[in-house]
Image (cartoon, rainbow, N blue to C red; front, side):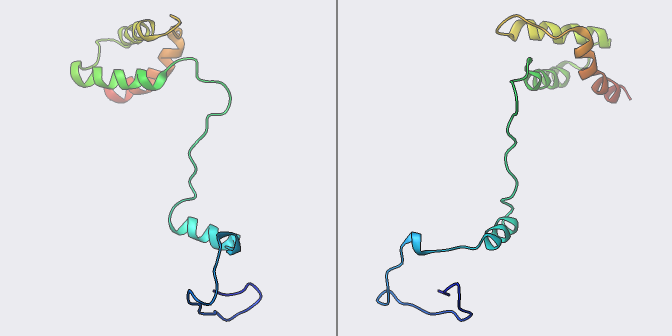
Length: 115
C-alpha cells in the first residue's frame, strides 16, 4: 500500500493490519485511466423524452426479411403500402404512419437497392 501523503510503497502482510473496503482510496485519475484502458467509457444510450410513436426498428427488421425472402416490390408505392399494412397489423392502437413519413424512411433504401 502507499499512503496518499507518501511516495514510497509499504509492503504489508496479513498480520500487519486488517484493511477494510472503506479504508481504500482510488484516485479519480486512476479510475478514468482504467476505464479508458479497458474501454469502459462508453455508456449505453438512454432514451430521452417520450417513446417513439411507431416501432420503426421492428418494421425495418420485417422489411429486411421480406426483401431477403421475396425481393423488392415492383414499385416504391407498393412497398409503402405494404409497410403501412404491416403497421396496421402490428400496432396496438391501430395507428399507422402517413404515406409521406413512410416514404421518407424507405426512399433512401429503395434508391440504394435500385442503384
